[in-house]
Structures are given as C-alpha cells and as structure tokens.
Length: 263
Image (cartoon, rainbow, N blue to C red; front, side, top):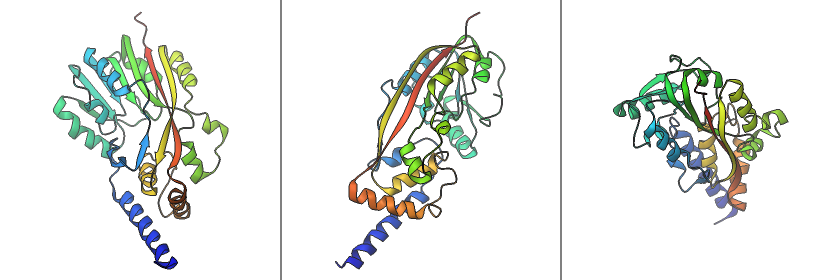
C-alpha cells in the first residue's frame, strides 16, 4: 500500500469513527456503548449497591436528576412511595418509560428550580452526579432523621481531556465541586455530614469516537462541543491514540452522606 493509500485509509477510519459517535443517541446514563472503547475505574464504595440497600429500608424516597432512571432501576426493592426528578426532556421521557412500571413518579423539574415537593416529604433523598447539589432544598424535603446519600463529581474531573480541547483552565474552575466545600454547604443548610470519601480514578479512551461520544453525552465538559468545531484537535488526537495508545484521564468522585437532625 502506498503512503497516499495508507493516509486515505486512516482518514476513512477516523471519519467512520466520528460518524458513528455522532449518530449514537445520548439520552440517559447508560454507558454500555463504551464497552471495548473506553474504561473508567469505579469508586471502591459501590454507590449503586449502597443506594439499593438504603432504598430497601426507606418508606419514602426521592432520586434527584435521575437521568434515564438507570441507576434507580438497578435497585431490587423500592420504597412504597418513590419519586424522581429530571430536567432534560429526552431523559424525562426515557426515565418515565423505564420507571413507571415500578411505580416511580418521574417529575420534570429544572435543576435550578425549587423541588416540587412538600416539606419533610421523604426519609431518603439520593442522587448520582447532580449538576449542583442544592442542599437547602434537600434539607427542606427531608423528614427529621432523614438521609441524603449521593455520589458527586469532584474537582478537576477528566480535566486532561477538557484541557486538551480548551487549554489550561483557571484555578477557580479546577477547584469547583470540592468535597469539603460541599460538606460546608450541607452543614450550612442544617444537615450533619456523617460520611465523606473521595477518590481519583483512571479513565482510558481507546479511540477518538469514544471521546466524541463522551463529550456529546457529558455536555458540560467542553461546552458547545461539535465535531466540526474541534475537527483539527480530533484528527490530532486520533493520530496520537494510533501512535501512543489510549488517551488517559482521571475522573474524581466523592461519596457524601448527610442527615437531617431528628429534632
């Protein structure tokens, strides 16, 4: 094969990868599409399992920003009263289809709006990767003695990838989502933080299509991301992965458990 033919083959390969990643739907939080194309280590605390254990003991629970309802649907046993909120319309539709058969009421609610529930309505509030945890509202809807149990995205998560496309980020952006700042915010809202754990976890992207799909799905990483806008960087990244192997980044996660005082 001539060098021109080889170059054309690589070009076709990347165009196929890009087209496939652009065509894939992004609603919900099902990441099975990444199998064999990207990996991410999981936190040691096993959030979905621990959440399911608490749901099995709860009387009334609320799952905030449920996505497509995937994590909530993993729980074998749900409380007698169970609701979920979601702000993105395609996810509201997907979560409703998935969860209604299990008796979950899915409420369309913007992430920055007051929660559409009465005071002290729930003994358990959960969330996996909320955009912003609104602790005053969480405290309001919790019953005395109730628990907020969640896994949050931590500071500087996947910033190797963010900065590959956007360049170095200001320090205040890198420090956003600090677990100890969130602990202070929870306490300011009247909650008692009883557990706080943080981990930094290795991620690997094995092809440029996986990067494109990730950035289309996790839209706040590179705001306004499109293939056309970042084509030169994507072409360079494709060549880098072909030459050096997977693109390595690190996610940050923290587990937070907070309780509303009984009196």
